[in-house]
Image 1 (cartoon, rainbow, N blue to C red):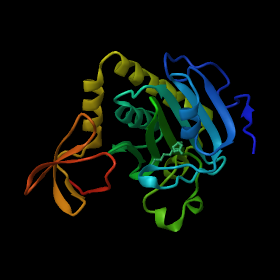
Image 2 (cartoon, helix red, strand yellow):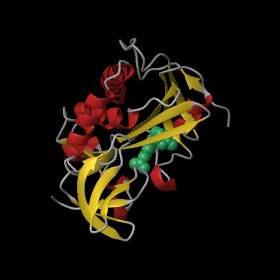
Image 3 (cartoon, rainbow, N blue to C red):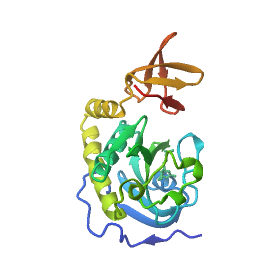
Length: 246
Ligand code: BTN
């Protein structure tokens, strides 16, 4: 099927950002907005799609991206852009706090009133980075498979707010831009500290691979530093981890 680039009704007026949103392309349908962001050129280019036919999540999972229900978008950057994995969940959390109680869950999920409302997927290829963000906006309980009912939510389901997706996109891009500019200006340490604090992981018991331990810190690359009976071990961003209460 040919790709149709629509005139963007989603963002009716220009964004006032420095890096994020240098161009905004709105599609009816793509395989994955991350694919397009990796293929296209442009630092800060945004790709939004109403529907993804092969939306993907972390750990090789698929990401359900039905039309009309969510906000599925990616931002393409030149180069590796250290710190995006910290900046993105903080920015989404700040915006979602307008609607309910939003929190960052390690490594970069965002919860709304305790359930996952946003997933973030960072991918790199040939000196290009795609920061993919999926936010569940209008889903009702029946839109999620049974096994996700206890874990997943949408803004509307969690808070009753029927949020305009264009407004949400604008707010997230604006918030993210401020942090991306901070990263460009060398403030990685501050953003890392904010993210580390927001995750609330330090002091929690954690289960990973065949081990258990207590999180003592979050490393500069996002890994958990876990104290076990074998000493301090690093648990990487890509690993499946079960964090328990403090
Ligand atoms: C996760 O929690 O597993 C990450 C989900 C990331 C989903 C978003 S939707 C926009 C972008 N395009 C994709 O194919 N994935 C990300």
